[in-house]
Length: 256
Image (cartoon, rainbow, N blue to C red; front, side):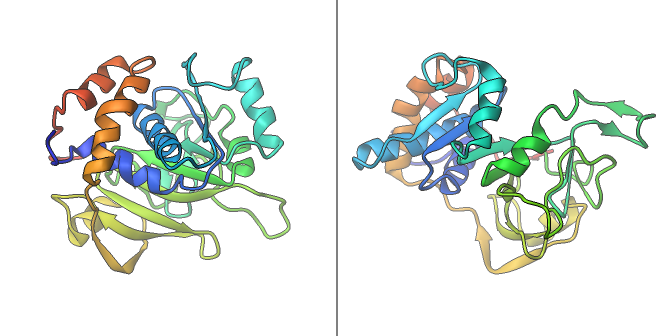
């Protein structure tokens, strides 16, 4: 087995670092990379004889604790029974606000997206929300979203247990500081550097003093990804799982 990690494997591994210690991870639709990261964490827990990590992956039968779809997801979140979830957006700004509605002044948006659905609810309820968007350009990472589908932070007198902990993109990884209500650049993926990230990011952020190139997953992680994780992922995402299993590298080219 090749020890060289692919771009997708690197994303999966770095997302998994934000899931350490969780009991229950929920993953929405069309999210093979977050789903694989959750499966990786579960596989590691099993290998270490640690407490079981529960997964609820929308669209999966084998890897889903829900029997009533999104209604049960919202109930479990309100009861504090979901530790981590993933959100994205057509726009994400430097305060962690996400926009799933459209571009332009609402309601006369020039571009219309599917809508907010339950994003705001889950953003408030789930303790660890990882923002994930593969495209990393000023078009997506903006100074201020055109419409706030879900706010990254709230006023001190607002009861809120949930919120963003990180933003992972196809170019970089940012931590989120709730006190400062802003992002801090933690690492950039191979082929990028501090200058290219700055040029491709439309919002201001701080840079960690130790920021460097995102580390590749180790051999043990790659073995899990290309073996157990790929097998489990194939039920819901067969094409993506085949890429992991067959070690088909994704070039570290433009992440737009």
